[in-house]
Image (cartoon, rainbow, N blue to C red; front, side):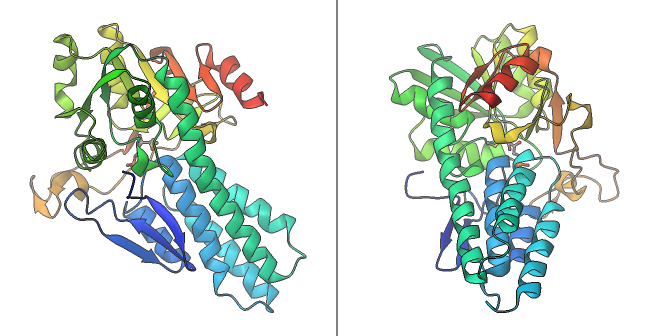
Length: 348
Ligand code: MRU
């Protein structure tokens, strides 16, 4: 993944690697206004909680980048509209709201400065969100690598890799760091229906880095555990409540139940920007329900009767009692997460 990137600011525009086309084609989208960012998040050209947050931040920059430097009311209206519209894209990933809040704060703190300077301040903040994210992933990798045995057989779900972040990845960052530290890691990647992030993205980026990866269908997970092929389950997160309840890609909860049954440690890797300390538990995490055609079709090919009813929640919540550790950039939280996560949040 070294030559590839998920998202970048380039000459007044945002470049995004279109994840809908992977692994078949490497297509870079060049986006010049915030509506382009709204579309890219909605249609999943860019996805994964941290990457969505980074895209959101750059979307706010784009909304004012070409604005007239003398018309303050229009400038502010553009920024506020962008924040509002980007907020309405995908509801579950905490990082989206966290990044938009950071952008809003920069806007309000610089309100009285010349508009050209506000533009620059917004761009610096978005770039910092991107750079910090890579840095956080590397730290998560270091902490997480210590949890992996010397010969690790890791089952992962969805894509919590470089493609889902500014780079390096959370769960896949742990795998990268463990390998860099000399451990032997074999990865089993769940394909992750319906949008196949595991098949299309996780297997793609691990193969790019020559990491040993085997793709399985989601429903094989239990059997593969029972065959003794897995000694760690490691996933990312979209939102973590203050008690550790964790929303992640649909199917994660089932994996956690299976891991418990097979006495396999179940770890979540995520930056603290994914933690929602305002939520006491996972029951109020908003769960995105996506279009029925994502289940009825693969690409545009119909694989079910066109009029069959579909329920397509994109995420589920894994209760904290099924989670052995949450790996963050400030260290590892163990149960009781209410205390340990809050300690990490306050750690300087
Ligand atoms: O619907 P997606 O592809 O955005 O879902 C992504 C996931 O569920 C990831 O596991 C999560 O965002 C963590 S990414 C580091």
